[in-house]
Image (tube, rainbow, N blue to C red; front, side):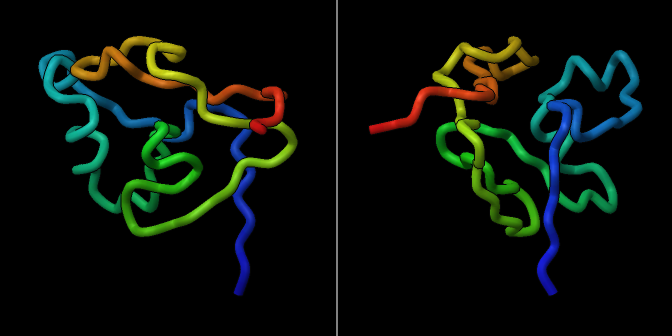
Length: 91
């Protein structure tokens, strides 16, 4: 069975996090969420693949992972990358 996933927002995961917990390691907090099906970091290392549960993906239509520091700064991840939409083709 083939499943297609369309991501329409970078807010793919909504988790209620207390202020004290928000100050802890963001990545560990998300990855330790009970029943988490997938977590897409969109980093140069993971690209369009989930970093949990082995889901793989590809970017289409000119989407690509941006360079380090192109995304918003997250707790304990100052070099967060953004997903670039309609990015120029990589040669």
